Length: 268
Ligand SMILES: [Zn+2]
Image (tube, rainbow, N blue to C red; front, side, top):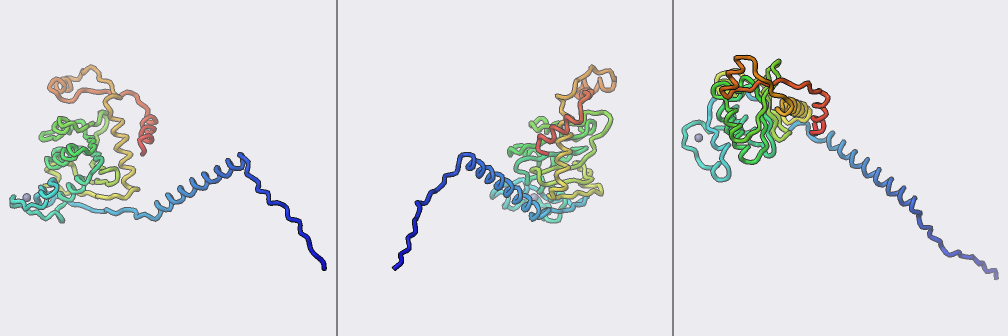
């Protein structure tokens, strides 16, 4: 009888060296990072481009907007004012609705701002803790009925075009950095009630982002800290300054590269 004999060696488990462990961890981290980047790319590709697209035309019928400012049960109470309360088809109500949807920030960039209801909306948001910033034109901020003084008095940060070479002629607002309202409409009573005007409301990121960037560039460019107050020589300007009107500023020779860098650092 032939018996077979197999010699069995004890199994030896080789422990990885420290450098091998480090390599494995490194490969794991790189793989995880690439995986997260890929998921982000996939999310950007698959998410809907825009959820809100609305076009508003003016002039529009006046309707009561009290419910937009009310909160809780007060918004459900009947209003005895006698005006229309249909907020669906009223362009101005829709505009207010979108502005009042701000929860974090509202950036307003308008040539002229004298509409009391829009001013009320801005103050309402400011009181609610929303970070509101306003940029207006240097000359038009002093027109009759301008709301800028009231906003500043309430503590809303307002800047105006400091360069004398151009007018700040934009009319747009960005809500929470995600929703854009832009078009021909100045924030005046006349524009809302008497003019043929238009507004586009969109949350398409590809459209909103450039406006966000433009606001930040203008906000930085018109920072009074960047500008030096010069002695006033012009008699017209002298009178306005003495009467509490605009001071005369002259731009420093600041660099546009510096501004764009700050805009980038601001996440734009
Ligand atoms: Zn009413």
